[in-house]
Length: 345
Image (tube, rainbow, N blue to C red; front, side, top):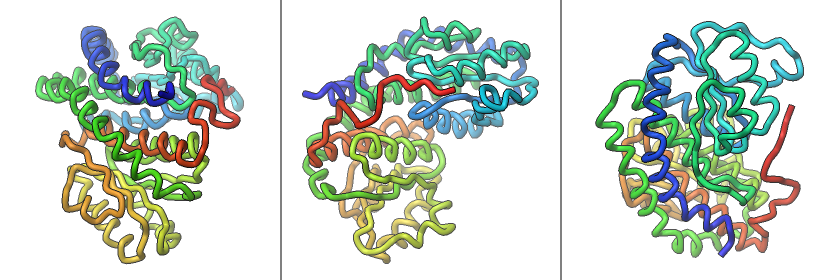
C-alpha cells in the first residue's frame, strides 16, 4: 500500500487524537485572543495550508463575526512594506513551519505588538519559535508530498478554535463526531477506486463549491494537479456563472462538492445548468436528489452541519486524486518537480 493511501486512511485516528490532546490548549488560546480584544484576523499560509486559511475565513467570519484577510507575504519579504496592524490576531498555518515568508509575517506582527498564533505539524520549527502561541497538529510524520492528514487536522483545529472563541458546547459535541464521520466516508474508498477508471484521460476539469466548502474546491483541484497533472481549476458556483460557464460543453468534467446546507440551492442550480450543457458531472454530496443528477456520484454517508462538512467533503476528492494517479500509471509518491517542504521568500 502506498504511503499516501496509508496517510489518507490515518485521518480518523489523527483527528480523534488531536481533539483529545489540543482541547485544553486551544481553549487557553481562545482566552489569550479575547484578552487582546482582537477585532481582525490576518492569516499567512501557502499551498494546502492556504486552503485551510480560506476555510478559516468563512468559519471565523460567519460564526465569530471576525473580518479575516489572507496575508500577502511578498509585502514582507520582497517589497518590505508590511501593513500597519491594530487589534489583529496574526495567524500562520504551515505543515512544516519552514517557509521563510510565512515566518516573516509572524515576526513582523510580534514587532508591532500583535498577538500571534502558529498552527503547524512541527512544534520545534522556526515558525513555532516565532509565534507567541502554538497549536501542534500532532499528525505524525507526513512523508507523502501531497498533504492529506495535515489538511484535515488544520481544518479541525480551526473549527475547534472557533467553537472555543464563542463558547459553543453544542459545536464542540459536533466536532467530537467528526473522526467517525470521516471513517464512514473512507469505508467507500474502493468504490472511488472503481470510478476513477472513467477519468483515465481527463486532462482538464473545473471544481465547484461555495461557502464553507469553497476551500474544498481549491484543495481537490490542488490534489488533482499534484497527483494526476490534470489542469483542475477551482471556482465558487457564483463565480463560475460570471464567465467561466462558457467553457462547459459535452463531456467537460465538472467536479462538484455540495453537502447539504444553505449553499446547496446555489450549487444545485449550477448542476442543472451544467446538465443542460451535457457536462460530465462528478458530485460529492450527502443529498440523494443531487447525487442522482451525477454521472459519477460520490456519496457522503454521514450528514454534518455545513460549517463542519469540509472535513468529510474533502475525503472523496483525496481518494479520487490518488486512484486517478494510479489509473494514469503515475507514481503518487513522487509527483514530478515537487518536494515535501517548499521554502519560498
